Image 1: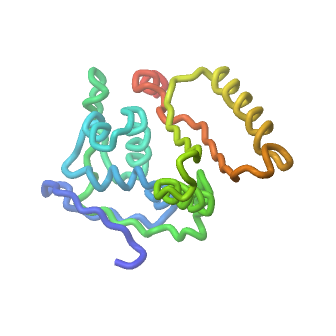
Image 2 (image 1 turned 90 degrees about the vertical axis):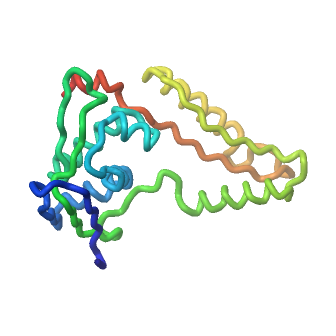
Length: 199
């Protein structure tokens, strides 16, 4: 149905109802990961099952499931002995959500689309050999557990390198123009045990 998003779940007769969301809760359900959780929910899944399917941490899954539970579209069955075995169940046989117009709910881009386009084009051209064999292409995706102090120090040192090489007038005017875009962000929320202690 135009302007609506629907999820249908295999449920028992007690949950044949339809939940229709047209209020501010639609903003909560606009999150791509939460939509993916609903897509694979089926009759219900544990935290561990979601984590394995989506390749994300238990804590991240639990956080987003709690957001969904607050909207009333899913139910959480808690197991205090084994948090990974908590189950999430659909609250109805069908959930219908009015889609939020993008103009009214702009999503900040981690990397601007025009920058992504430039990088993708450069990677394609480098792979095809446009720049020759001496072209320096570096793609890194690194993960580590850092303290706040370490993350701050990393950011400071990285900015110092950027200031040294990338501002106008620096580098070699006859050299190849390079681009750099870095994002330092938490990708693993608090460990599940920590989040439980705070709940």
